Length: 421
Image 1 (tube, rainbow, N blue to C red):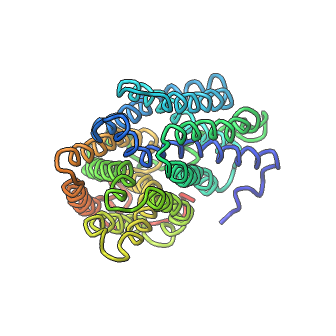
Image 2 (cartoon, one colour; image 1 turned 120 degrees about the vertical axis):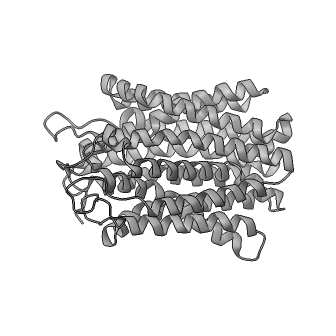
């Protein structure tokens, strides 16, 4: 595989490092799980009420993505990244002093706006403009920043929260994010000079120039069964993923595990995702991409059942490793499946439409919180997650290449290839 950094100057390599650091800002959002129980107990909220804040965050992110893209095109990436870094720090400082739920919800709206600006759109576009070959690997490396940031936040928050000082933990995350990210956002990340390389949109960079005449556009994709099967798979995935992740530390401490050890386990699950993101693309090129996706979703489904037996010896560590790997890998494999089903030419619009299911993440978090508030346990929520993942695994088996004239239409086994890395 071609080294994606071999043909770019030293300045460009610093830019890519800056993109990775900016992605670490996404990891700041992972502090929500370690602080959930402390905020609920201190302010007298319900866990479902806390979870509604996550819904506001996700809705805000979804609505902010188009605005972020337009602002980056007009004012450049540095302006957007700098502004969103400052907004991220301000939101966490406001959170450290909040007293009511409506303040928490408003702060989550601000957080959603900040995270959208620090997310894949801006840094992905910058990276694609600097790297001419091996863009998939370069983007995968940059996107590990969110895992690095999330792991650091989980460990740091667990250490501070040993004294139940959640306000200090939140303020520390905000100040730390600004101190770390702002220099890179303001002075390092920038577009290449004119004439360095053609400006390549993120979708084109990911597609790796594999446009095909038989590729389906969004209206055509909407008329296929695979689109709706994938929509359900994504719904089940996000419903489960955020529903578990946001309540994981609280769940583990309910079992008698110390907050510090629970936070370390939470960080481990996030950290494992780094290797998953780097390695799963290579695996998908060595075997059928559908086979790779099915195997990974089977691991994810197995992890959801392990939650029901988490108190058995050795189960917790197996769950954390399986959960961390499978959830991170799924973020890489599902876009590959979309391209295999419909082609890469209209990937951005089709995958964007499928990503509406991201709102299911808010429902999963609220559902888990409401189940606990009513029953004093997450067990019913975890059973629901496991059943949904099982049905999604079956649905994924029925996904097929929907392009006419490819020789694969109507066949459930999708071919692999080297076009995506």
